[in-house]
Length: 87
Image (cartoon, rainbow, N blue to C red; front, side, top):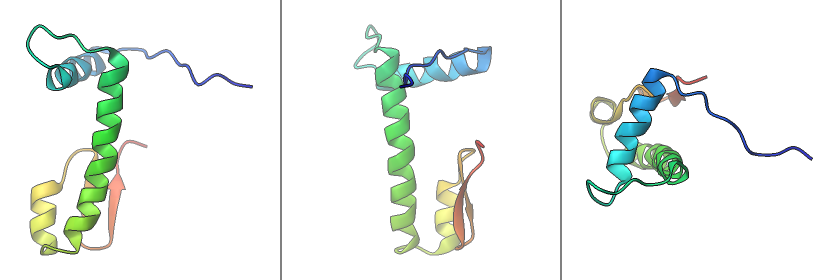
Protein backbone atom coordinates (compact mmCIF):
# COMPACT_ATOMS: atom_id res chain seq x y z
CA UNK A 1 0.00 0.00 0.00
CA UNK A 2 1.33 3.42 -0.92
CA UNK A 3 1.25 6.50 1.24
CA UNK A 4 -0.58 9.67 0.23
CA UNK A 5 2.06 11.79 1.96
CA UNK A 6 4.37 13.86 -0.14
CA UNK A 7 7.10 16.40 0.31
CA UNK A 8 6.72 19.70 -1.47
CA UNK A 9 9.78 21.38 -2.86
CA UNK A 10 9.22 25.05 -2.37
CA UNK A 11 10.71 27.18 -5.08
CA UNK A 12 10.78 30.90 -4.38
CA UNK A 13 7.67 31.39 -6.53
CA UNK A 14 5.74 28.55 -4.83
CA UNK A 15 6.72 29.91 -1.40
CA UNK A 16 5.51 33.38 -2.42
CA UNK A 17 2.18 31.94 -3.60
CA UNK A 18 1.75 29.92 -0.41
CA UNK A 19 2.52 33.00 1.70
CA UNK A 20 -0.12 34.99 -0.22
CA UNK A 21 -2.65 32.17 0.16
CA UNK A 22 -1.88 31.95 3.90
CA UNK A 23 -2.68 35.65 4.29
CA UNK A 24 -6.05 35.10 2.58
CA UNK A 25 -6.90 32.08 4.77
CA UNK A 26 -5.67 33.65 8.03
CA UNK A 27 -8.30 34.87 10.48
CA UNK A 28 -6.28 38.03 11.21
CA UNK A 29 -2.79 39.46 10.81
CA UNK A 30 -1.37 37.41 13.70
CA UNK A 31 -2.87 34.09 12.56
CA UNK A 32 -0.58 31.55 10.89
CA UNK A 33 -2.82 28.79 9.50
CA UNK A 34 -1.36 25.30 9.01
CA UNK A 35 -0.16 24.63 5.47
CA UNK A 36 -2.72 21.81 5.20
CA UNK A 37 -5.52 24.37 5.74
CA UNK A 38 -4.04 26.68 3.09
CA UNK A 39 -3.76 23.85 0.56
CA UNK A 40 -7.30 22.61 1.38
CA UNK A 41 -8.67 26.11 0.87
CA UNK A 42 -6.85 26.52 -2.46
CA UNK A 43 -8.07 23.15 -3.76
CA UNK A 44 -11.63 23.83 -2.62
CA UNK A 45 -11.54 27.24 -4.28
CA UNK A 46 -10.33 25.75 -7.56
CA UNK A 47 -13.10 23.14 -7.60
CA UNK A 48 -15.80 25.65 -6.61
CA UNK A 49 -14.54 28.14 -9.22
CA UNK A 50 -14.89 25.57 -11.96
CA UNK A 51 -18.41 24.69 -10.79
CA UNK A 52 -19.33 28.39 -10.66
CA UNK A 53 -17.96 28.87 -14.18
CA UNK A 54 -20.08 26.02 -15.47
CA UNK A 55 -23.16 27.55 -13.83
CA UNK A 56 -22.36 31.06 -15.12
CA UNK A 57 -22.09 29.79 -18.67
CA UNK A 58 -25.81 29.01 -18.57
CA UNK A 59 -26.78 32.44 -17.21
CA UNK A 60 -24.52 35.03 -18.87
CA UNK A 61 -23.30 35.80 -22.37
CA UNK A 62 -20.10 33.87 -23.23
CA UNK A 63 -17.93 36.97 -23.72
CA UNK A 64 -18.97 38.35 -20.33
CA UNK A 65 -18.07 35.10 -18.57
CA UNK A 66 -14.76 34.92 -20.45
CA UNK A 67 -13.86 38.53 -19.63
CA UNK A 68 -14.80 38.16 -15.98
CA UNK A 69 -13.51 34.71 -15.16
CA UNK A 70 -10.42 33.87 -17.19
CA UNK A 71 -7.42 33.14 -14.96
CA UNK A 72 -3.98 31.65 -15.44
CA UNK A 73 -5.39 28.40 -14.02
CA UNK A 74 -8.75 28.13 -15.78
CA UNK A 75 -9.01 29.49 -19.30
CA UNK A 76 -12.28 29.69 -21.14
CA UNK A 77 -12.64 28.83 -24.79
CA UNK A 78 -15.69 30.70 -25.96
CA UNK A 79 -18.50 28.25 -25.22
CA UNK A 80 -16.76 24.96 -25.86
CA UNK A 81 -14.61 24.18 -22.83
CA UNK A 82 -12.86 25.21 -19.63
CA UNK A 83 -9.21 24.17 -19.74
CA UNK A 84 -6.58 23.90 -17.05
CA UNK A 85 -3.11 25.03 -18.09
CA UNK A 86 -1.29 23.38 -15.19
CA UNK A 87 -0.58 20.00 -16.85
